[in-house]
Image (cartoon, rainbow, N blue to C red; front, side):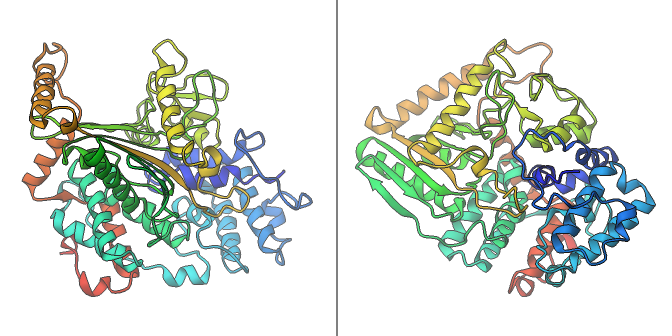
Length: 521
């Protein structure tokens, strides 16, 4: 068997371990994905030592002096040759023994996805290299009843996140901004981009050395109305607000401000930046590229990120009009949700490498790992429902995120070195536009005009089979804010409780400040 690490490495990027362990079906798909790796679509890197024999139970006893690279190859081949490995006692034992041996080999990286597989699929909780094992903190069980999820005050949660950023060396001013971006997502009900991102997206990436806590923000070029900024791979959570405020300041002086940014990183919810503009009397626009997920219309290869194109418009309502959404029909997280619910994926949301519009949710998740499926743009696959429109908007965002910046795209921002399996930086591009309303008409006139139109939409005739209400963009997020403020804060699911515990118990000084979280009482 020729060793190809692409399936294993892609797994680290695209399959959340919390999802893998949530259903037996998902685990089977996880393991079975390795048996199909002879003809991957995604770029691959052959075994540097093609003379290595395939790993089997027979060869296990013959390799007591194997090198680190050979041990890793044997583990990969064991998974590839045995799709149901986690269900066979003999093979489970062989995998456990070999992983233990691999963990003690020279130069082994504790972040290697094989250890995640060992934990999530084979239940090997403490098989890690010595250095990684020392850093691992075992926490007590958190509450598991869904109806007993604790509600934590937003100010408390924001302060905790700020304290976490401070432990990484983020300056106090920037830590305040970063925590504000994240808590705003939780206030709006966008749970995927708030506390849920703190550890896996920001802290873990700082730990991996592919994202940096305190980098300078450089001005590459600038005019009265424009600027090109270099974030130097710092936290996008403080780079984004800096760039949007710069665009707003320029708009207040000259009517319009446009800022492009390069070498940034994940900047949180795009809607945060749109509302920065609306709160200061401006129309705002922002977008960012991301790792490749969307195939172009009539194509099957993931080429573009889910690339949001986000507008914010001031209105006379209690909330602005904010359209903050991806340019794909669905995001990967939505398909994972379908799997948890045991339902099919709607036709047209995903296309495979044979051009088939897939609906088999479990198969889709498996083949996305293998690079054999891609998300479709808004409008779906092909052109019957206008998929070329979503494709055009996704490409627009990619262009505005890379062309000014001379920035990378596609495979260059996938986040993982496919040759070694180690994380690598994802230098993203963003853009920010602000238009000062007062330079064109009185702000209250603009807000009144916008508000009347939006109210007319909400008051228009309702579908008899619908929910009896029409929403406008930004309204669902406002509803979530009102509800959560009324309940006194945000519910913290068990996985996020565990993340908080892990951060508290591993980051310097946090244990003293947070001896006991409210959910530990």
